[in-house]
Structures are given as C-alpha cells and as structure tokens.
Image 1 (cartoon, helix red, strand yellow):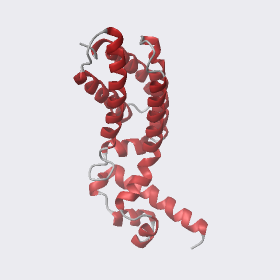
Image 2 (cartoon, rainbow, N blue to C red):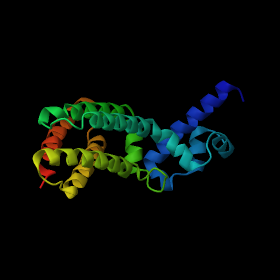
Image 3 (tube, rainbow, N blue to C red):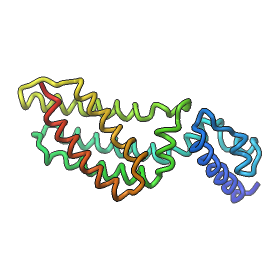
Image 4 (cartoon, helix red, strand yellow):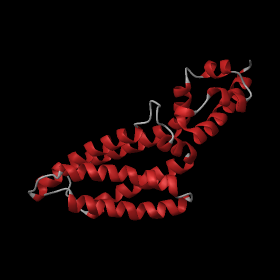
Length: 204
C-alpha cells in the first residue's frame, strides 16, 4: 500500500468512525460497522490504531488538545498578573479566552459534541472534569490573593461551583447553539455574569 493509499484509507476510517461515534457513542460503537462504512477490513483499522479507544482519541483530540493549550496559556497569564489588584476590567482576558474557546469548539463542533456527550467508557470520558480541576486550582490561587487584598477568607465552595459552571456553560452552548456568531454573543454575556459572580461571591 502506497503512502497515498494509506492516507486515503485512514481518512475513510476516521470519517466513518465520526459517524459511528456520533450515532452510537463510544461504548456502543462497532469497529465492524466502521469498517463496513469505510470499505476496509478490521486489519486496516488495527494497522493505524491500537484499539477503539485510540481511534476515538485521534478524533476528539482535534478539539481537546487545542482547548487544553488555550486554558494552559490563560492560566499562565493569570499567574503572571496574580499580584495585581482585581477589578472587572482585569478580567477582559476571560472574554478573550471565551472567544478562543468558542472558535476551537465550533471549528470542530462534531468532535466537541462527541467528546462531551459520547465519550462514556473511553479514556477521555473525564476530560471536562480535568479542565474543571485545572480552572479550580487557578481560581483558588487567584481567590487567595484577592482575599488578602480585601481582608477576607476564600469561600472554597463557590470557587469549586463557579469552576464547574464555567465549563458547563461551554458544554451547554456547543450542544444547543449551532451558530458560532450567536454562540460568541451568548458567551460574552455568560462570561460577564461569571466574572461578576466570581468577584462578588468567592469571599466571605
């Protein structure tokens, strides 16, 4: 099999797998049905992928990896400015992150929905929880600085809850809103709400 033929076969497998995972979810997806749709043998799948989980990861990592990188960059920016005083304007970068995440999610919307709603049973089914944990750690550090500035204590429950709400907002958006322009408009309102809530509710 030539390099071109390998690339074409792999592309057919991935296209068929997207349909299969989108319809049945990871757990109920069948490699045999994927082969049938792709017009190849199971041997062809195992030539490119170790198992069904690796095939699923190949697809959804198109969205997961860019999201992780965007969140990591955002966290680094926050850490570089963690000693500054806090105000609504200090969180404009939250809006910038929101726009970036919407672009990623909607560029790969099918993969996003697969990751968020069809990944049960795969090694990536806890991906949203991983991102929540990263945000909670960051927001906890920011809240500690903010609390010292205000002479108050951190409400750890609210930091945890707002971190969940942050991620859940994107999950609801990408699974319910098809238009990316409308998604960005809604995301800006959501982020303004979350930022205001963060400033008002994380201290006690």
